[in-house]
Amino acid sequence: MNKPCKILIIEPSVIIREGIIAIIENIKDQTELLHVETVEEALKTGQPELFKMVLVNPITFSNSKVTLSKFQLFFNQQNIIGLISNHYDRNLHKNFTDNIFITDSFDTISNILAKHFASAPQPLNDNDSALSEREIDVLKLLAIGKANKEIAEELFISIHTVISHRKNISNKLGVKSTAALVIYAVANGLVDVDGFSI
Amino acid sequence: MSLKHEKIGYGIKVSKLLFTYPQLILVLERFGIKLGVHEKTVEELCAEYQISTKVFLMVANLNIDSSYNYQLEFDVNEVKQIVQYLMQSHTYYADEVFPEIIQNIHLMSEDSQKPEMQLVERFFNEYKNEVDQHFDYENNTVFPYILNLLEASAKNNYSVIDYREHHDDIQEKLDDVKRLLIEHLPQKSNSKLRRKILFALFDLDADLQIHSKIENEILIPQVEQLEKQNLA
Image (cartoon, rainbow over the protein chains, first blue to last red):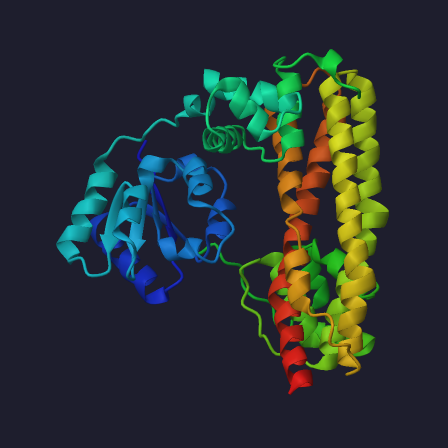
């Protein structure tokens, strides 16, 4: 079955948006294009795995509470292409699989798009959300009420490493508050419930 | 091709609007508009209830499409109406939404007999207390300040800039509860309770997002302008 190829464009400028749409339609007939102006709207589109390509202008992150890492968790990272319209730190381009610059020629843009049309759909990498052993160690100590400093001392790691583990744990589990992390730990038998006064 | 809804205008019939966007029934209620709207248009109904059409359309459009671009010019009377609308929303959360969720979470916790569910109950109760404090602060400090400012008798020792800083992100913990209930906590029985809780949480979340948007992006900039004018 030849399903239309779904593409999401997150770009506030109508000129750029219509321009990129014209190029896409020029090289591929069967496409289903959705466009939004903000990252928040993009996250409301539902079924992120259905998008073959997500073209996003990174300036949309600057007035948004959504972080790039949350965005990458939501959409399949390999499908996210940067749409670069302004002066933008070159290192940040590495966040995206590919980048289309406003100064790129028609051929360059077509080539990037064609490459993504041709690529096989990437399976979602659900395994990424499993906690590492070290992260579980940190979570266990966190759940019994230890402060970052105490966790660092107990595991012989720096406090910065503890903080970075905590961030990764939160990203993987999708919960941020300590209380919610404790609930996760209890539900998964990582801590002994007897230690709690509920 | 576009995800955008059509924007609603003042000439549209309110009944037609409600059939397409039933969530606006709640908006009408908060503006004090009673149902049985007959054939009246937005403009006619707003005139009848002495509500600014501009304010009504801003709130209604934001409710059907949160990316809606509103005009940023409201007069004193309109700012008052926005404040009143927000206060009505607080009453709705405090009197209707939270008690129901709290009760269902309590039932779910009792039903499951699991320690993690007792923790969820405690977590949500603490969250609710935070939200209450936030609403109390707005109702008792921020909104009276704004209303005073509108009467041009404001004291100079407070500013909405303080308010913006005080405006905690109450969305985050709500997300945590949803995530726990959907993804992390196994469900033994009684799917009905958890479903009810989740639906209520998602509704609350969507409503709160628009609520914060009105506060942060409309009310605060407006009041900041007023503060500048008062100082000048």
